[in-house]
Image (cartoon, rainbow, N blue to C red; front, side):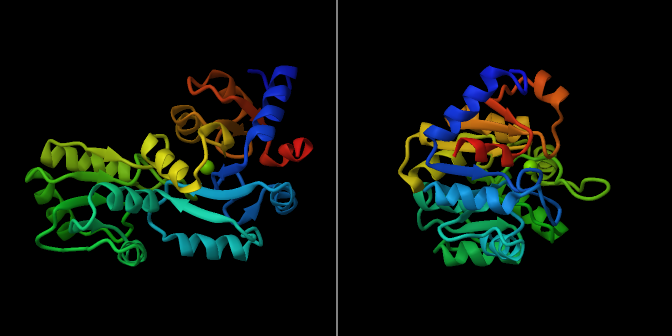
Length: 272
Ligand SMILES: [Mg+2]
């Protein structure tokens, strides 16, 4: 797949034509830090005008969906009908479906805890039946001791997403994937389920929520090993954008082959 080739153009056009919902990665895809990529406001407006829905999709479970909505609104790109879907929400949906009513010990931020509670998930400190590991930027030794005990006791163990580090200015800080390694070392166990990109739990949850077959959904993102692997694992259309972590050279050699490549998401406007 060579960027700029006729085949790539055709695939890009087909992905756009067949998709009713666009799952959009955020950082590196619609914005970089606090800056929108190119004429993103108009691109997203054109997507909405064409009748397509936008679901902002992130693995970062340190923030509640509401907090992302506020950021997107501040940037002027949270429009009518748009939604935010985080790996934290996927974990909530998974718990409601497979562990309904079970008491959950959540290693997570206050924002995520409030979101879980609002979703009707009973949170417990001492007598929890399920252990959930999210991106807790307020992690403490006490929380590690508690979740480690539940994991060693053999309780179901769910992690929101697998990312080892979180993209940020300067040195990337440790993310859930690093916490998973720490707990693997102390407990000897890996999570029974990891919800977020690139796995199928979040993909299944999104599909069920949207009531759509996979080929009506397109994932656009800048990371081959999360965004594109997520599209491929779930049978979604997948567009790799070169506006973030991936340049044309990496796009050519990554084993996670994208269906189509775009310089940025703004390119899809031509096909709407
Ligand atoms: Mg990204």
